[in-house]
Amino acid sequence: MLQRISSKVVSKIAILVMLQIILIVGSFGVLSYFQSQQSSLANTINIAGKNRYLTSNLLLQTQSYLDGTSNISQLNTAVNNLQSNIMKLKQGGVISGIQLQPLPIAFYDVWNAINTKWTTFKTFIYNSLIIQGHENRVKAISYLTRTRQQLNILASDLIGTSDTLVTQLAEQANKNFVQPIILQFIFVILNIGILVLILYLITRILKPIFLLTDAMSNVKEGNLEISVNEKGKDELSVLARSFNLMLETIRNSIKKQEELTNELAKANEEMKQASRLKDDFINIAAHELRNPVQPILGLTQILRSKLRSGDDGNNTSREEQLKFLDTIMKNAKKLLLLEDNILDIARIENKSLKLNFEKFNLEELMSAVVQDTKDQIDNNNKITLQYNQKAGTIFQVNADKARLSQVLSNLLSNSIKFTKNGTILVTLEGKENQNQAIISVKDTGQGIDAEILTKLFTKFTTKSYRGVGLGLFICKTIVEAHGGKIWAENNSDGKGATFNFSLPAQISNTSSSIES
Image 1: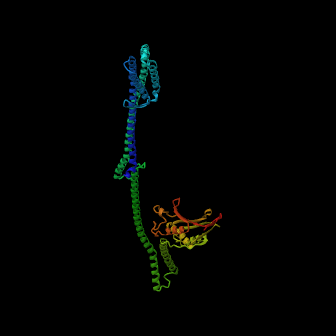
Image 2 (image 1 turned 180 degrees about the vertical axis):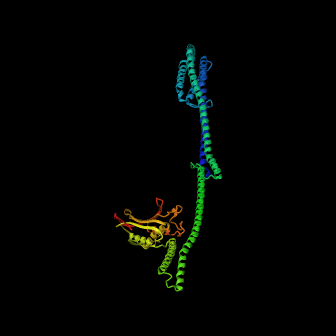
Image 3 (image 1 turned 90 degrees about the vertical axis):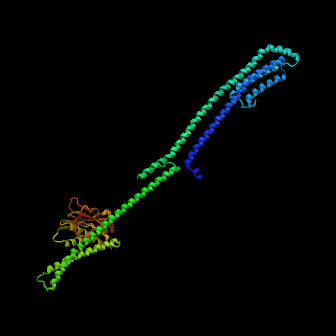
């Protein structure tokens, strides 16, 4: 019951019902009041009309007294009755068993006129007509005969004034009769208005229910984007808010489920991709291992056979033997490089890649790496390797010298691998105001395949039949570990690509330049 009382919806209906009850009780009370006023006014009209009868009776008693057919007591009774009736007419009270209300103030002027005429009539009777003693009765009768016309005039005036009061009271009664009708009409309109308001409120109350019903139908059909208007603070508004929150929770749950499904699908795809990359890596690694191993085994077997056969070198020149050994060493270095790359990947994955920082001149390191790379270029390759750096510029860096050599060597090897005939240009530039050195390796080879451009620096990314796709990933890790950045792009002329990486550096710059 307390919950029902505290209900805002029930409270609204209860307020309207109370208004309806108050309006009904009020209308009954007001109409009863006007009815009582009408009855009281009717009684007042009766009493005012009684003045005519009592005046006529007094006139008759006066004449009877003068004729000797009645005594003074009867005359006084008639006088007192008329006087009492006139006084009760103004003051109200119980008269003839009827509770009479005081005369309304609006009629005092007429009542005063009645009272004045009554006083004149009464004075005329007692002072002019009633003569004490039998000896004077003859004179009184003679006087009465002479003044009978005056007596009738006074009585007629009193009756006329009383009739005037009766007329005015009747007019007021007619007006009062119209007022209850108007009030009844007003009360009918108000009752209709309250009923319409109750109907409107019930419609407002039912509207959220209709909306919830429609929303549930939409949800049943699979539409979860719908929502219900939740204006207000009553229970139905709370229900609408709860419904909207439920839908939002369902939508979020479905969205989260879809995200998890997408993530799972993505993870599955990544697993498949990783599996493919693993297979590719195994195949490429096996191929990369086979390439250097075969010449090593073949040339070693040739040298071993010659030594066992006691070849004194007449059949095989010393230069040819050195050439065999150079080839064996070259392929052995390839194996060592592959091993180092695989070990570096393992260190990177385990976050155990360590850097030995020291301060040195970056230009000197780059000159040495470029020169070393020139010495290793196969004479059969028609490649020109150039290194440009502004003369007099000092690039002081705090870095791992061996790792930076590894980065530049990897980039040069990568360019050499994809450039059969052309030029490779290495440049070192500085942004003095940013304390940053920019190293670029620009080639005129076949460029970067668009398919792998966006994932160029990830593991196992390659379109070459040589290499396992680890070098650029290792370069990226090393450069970023030094606080730098690495990026690559195809050249604007459509010939070759350019690899760039930046490093923090302390730079002092001059304007001249040299080429080596």
